[in-house]
Image (cartoon, rainbow over all chains, first blue to last red; front, side, top):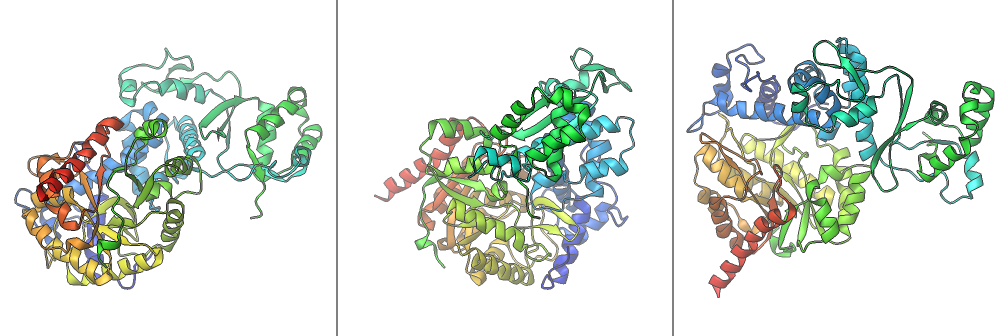
Amino acid sequence: MSYDPNAPEKLKEVQSWFASVITQPIDNKSHIAPLSPQGNPIESEAPLYIKPSPTLKPEQRIEIYNQQYWWRLLNVMHTTYTMATRMLGYKKFNDEIAVPYLEAFPSEHYSVSHIGDRLLEWMEHHYAGSDKQILTDAIAIDDAMNRAFFETSFCPITEGIAPEEAFTVHAQLQPHVTLFKMDYDLFGFRKEIHSKDPDYWSSHHYPNLEHALSEQGGHFPQLKKDRTYCFIVYRTRMNRVQWEEIPLAEHALLSLFIDGVSIEQACEWLSEKGKEYLTDAGPHIQEWIQGWIAKQLLREKSKD
Amino acid sequence: MRNQDIPKLGIGLGLRIPHYADIFTKRPAVDWFEIISENFMVDGGKPLFNLERILETYTVVQHGVSLAIGSPTPLDFEYLKRLKALTKITRTPWVSDHLCWGQTPGGHYHDLLPLPYTREVANYVAERARIVQDYLELPFALENLSSYVSYQIDEMPEWEFYTHIAEKADTFFMLDVNNIYVSSRNHGFDPQDYVRNIPLDRVLQIHIAGHNDKGEYVLDTHDHPVRDEVWQLYADVWPKTGGVSTLLEWDSKIPPFQETWEEALKAKQFQRNLEAGLR
């Protein structure tokens, strides 16, 4: 992004300074940092740009914007990444994920709903905690829930054609559909911890929950790893965001539609390359395909 | 441009998710709803599904929070394209956003940040407002902010800056009377000076809202009923605008639908009282 060539120089200077100050993290008591980003005491630098009010000094006035910036963005992070917030508690989530992420990747989109667009990328490259895998999975689930809410639906593959012709249409998953394969039941755990606010989990323990085996590192859930779990997140025809556990073989078949394939080709794949799934899939495949069509999970593959 | 050709819609409410169930099931007799444009500038999904249900019954007006017209970055025509596409769906009679900045080449700040009130900045913003109105092909209004800072380089009071932009760009005012009150407390001016010194026939809509008085300053929180001082200012300003559309904003600690609507209806009572007083 660049400057508008018509933007007044003085305006650019004031805005650049203002932005640098309000994006500096506030402290635990929500106070502005004592030093400006330029390294000067804020009480000597702020008066160069900001006038005092009848009741507040310049640094107290800009502190209001500094607080609003962080409170607003952190609130969006908490309401978007509901599971990670509950697993870590507000303070740890802010300190270890949200604040360093927002400092590394400031918002690039006009809509605040895109604020977490690069969080998984940040987790991969910057987060080093031993809980990295489960937190990354938790964030991916909340991203999928968001996508299921906001993403569009294209015409289903059965639109305007006879049902039998749908089998040969080169199809892919609708943009609101996401598949998961993991070795713990994180969706079941999500349902359980969502029954209470994040503050509740700061003072209560997980082991009473069905899906949490124990706590790790003091207060962190460790989930049972007893088998492979597969899930699908999508938006229903009634526009409700929904998740379901699906069989491993159905997950394998649906995964083919990420890149694009016809239903006929998916069936061929099962009998040629996916033989390991054949026993489980055989008795159910017709029912699964009917379900995908009824739920309108598949669209014609885009030409892009 | 003056507001005589702008439709007078009556009393409206900001459309908020906690009220959807009441609105969809009871279809209350609200004159119109204001939406936050950006919430519906999406390709599809549940937001547009809900918007279509609202449009079956109600007039919808678009109010934006992310144009950031005073930013030092180029106008975002991808944003404007989506905004204009939404106006075709909503058939909004006008579009509004805020007289603020919110973006630099370093990112978006998701806040309504106040501008320095200089002639050079006013000319810069006016040119951009003119372009936006021409592009949207709809009446375009900028809303006065609640603000907590003023700049050393300010050359004029806010009302002069605001008027200069509207007159030079030939755009409209979205006048937030709560914001006038909040800023008057934070900067130490008389709110009457504000309303006396702007051309009220350029107002196409009024916002009312509650705020939080923190003693040393007043915060525009939209989480309280409208304060008496703001109602007083509203009662003074509204007739001078020619009776423009009025909207209650309630964005945080949102009460049940009926309670929110009753707060908005106080505006109707003020209007009736004023009309009775005129007879």
